[in-house]
Image 1 (spheres, one colour):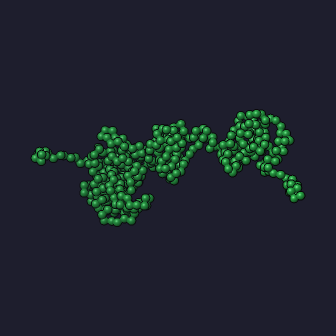
Image 2 (image 1 turned 30 degrees about the vertical axis):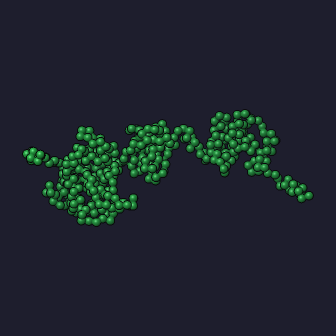
Image 3 (image 1 turned 135 degrees about the vertical axis):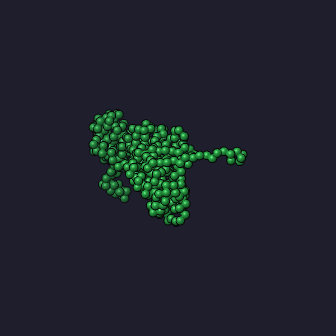
Length: 398
């Protein structure tokens, strides 16, 4: 077997050539372990490296993860570091960029596609399991790991990245490159004028997530609830998140927008997203009930105040029900019914409804009802006047 292999001709390769401003290559490499203050524990860092293929000038940033948001943020900061854009970005097939690696039809992560469209560069994935197509940046990662990391110590991630930026400008950028035999920063002076300018307004980068709208009309992202129209309950929606906003889409149709909350357990609700009955309940709060009752009349306002002032039972629904009777019977009849209900010391929804259904509000109050109101009213329930109490006390003594 060894003889057969020895007889085979050596495999030929072709070195890829890139004109100025044509392409950049991107890759991650393992970095040192540092304390992550967010978690309070040591974590592996990762070196994000973007290398311009013509000049070999680099952008290096160390991060704690390889999430989509980190990937997008590193791209933005790399473009701002160069002050310009290459025509295309050559990448491997990381999950934060490619959702399905394929020779002919790779599927790009939706957020990364949006980033490419916003900045105006093309995404160029390598063939699956063929990293040699981005050998320039792989050599750059090895150079960072072999020449930058071993000679330094770092207090934290901020210190690590500050030292990396100085190293790129003061050492890596001015060395004689092993392939080009020129300094990367000198070649970058030729390359930068040919690169695409940065957009006047940077694109709003966000991540996309597939989330189900739960029966309470909310989706949950990072333990925060955001509402969407109740008609979409049970559907799986697209949720686009940035540092400041959360947008909810049904396919490509925007159905809800919220200011993003970073407080776990928070709830962001738009009343119009709720079913009509729930929307009506939440809109008709205590202040609304008091305001509407005053429009009906003083007796109605007094009755509603008594309902809402109950110290044992929450009677908001009862107050809403009383005010709802005005739609059927009118404000004048409702006010008269409230007068009679108060006269009978029964400020309750069922009492007011019974008075209206029976038409008792149309009958005048007699003396007996008026006396009952004075005896059983809110401020003198089961009370006797002072003279009567003194008379009873005198009879007891004798």
